[in-house]
Length: 270
Image 1 (cartoon, rainbow, N blue to C red):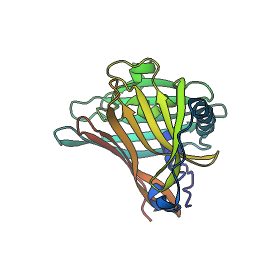
Image 2 (image 1 turned 45 degrees about the horizontal axis):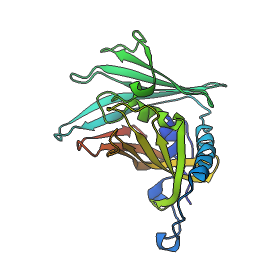
Image 3 (image 1 turned 120 degrees about the horizontal axis):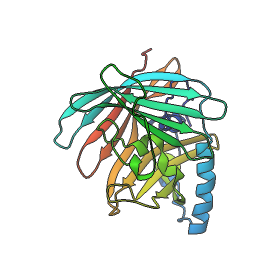
Image 4 (image 1 turned 30 degrees about the vertical axis):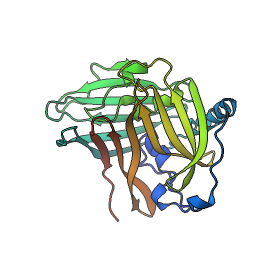
């Protein structure tokens, strides 16, 4: 199986999880040769979820990094626009922080979203407005819980998606083992304990595990308060840079409105 190396360009927790493997490039047994295992019992699933999430959240970067890119947004009427974004990762001995800064674009004000990770504690989130030519922290406020169920820079990426906050919800269960994109995955269900009508009620993630330090989310689905499929997340494209495979695009789609948002990273070309 081809493993993608962790690099300083990895600037978000999604990146850390995705770059461990690339589904389209992995070699695995044909699906027909693998019998589908039975669903896990609730008790087994909860035990498996605790181990999986503990190992997953233990992954952290060792170096600081910055990167730029563009957030491409297509609304429900198929109108498209782009928002320049900058990503920064700061690694400290006891915790690490990653930020997303989106410049003002059209009628959409700019904003900066910062995520502070100090496992095994809950992540902390802050949101700051950004005016034209301004990257100050004036107006910074903490956000949590269902406040994270709001778009980042007018896109389909919600704050909770960027922070993987659903992995901290108290109700976690591995439902079953299943092949996804030629990878053998744990299917993890995260249930929101206090959903509001505009929030996710649950998130289902397909997570491939090779070793405890090699864990990757290859696909995720978010369901609304009526338990209807709302959004799907997928890594879309990788590129080889200096001999290392790196994520170039990631995409999230709203299945109810038809809108779509994609983050494209500015990677050097060999």
